[in-house]
Amino acid sequence: MDNQRFAQDAYFVDAAEKKYTVLKDEKGFFNAAKHIQFNFGIGLAPKETVSTWAKFPAPPADVEKVTLYLPGAPPFEDVAIGK
Image: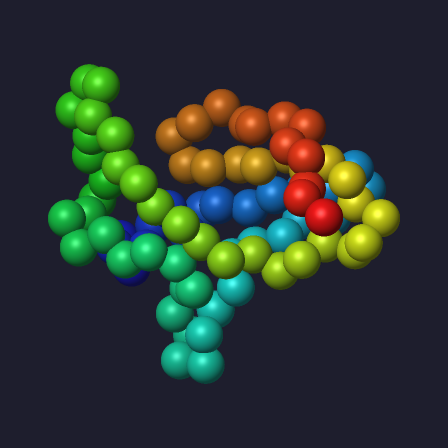
């Protein structure tokens, strides 16, 4: 579903390289923003931005930093996990 493409392709990994993907609800939809404007693909003009959100499972308590991967962006490395 293109209106949830950001969630479909987003994930983070911890130092042990364990991959965490976006959670889904009881109907199988991602627990994330739905972008109706992207029903037929994602397209942004130069300097255009989009706000979004997604819910991920919590990593184990000893994980302090992760690397976040979002579609169309370079990895966000060493993101501190708030405790």
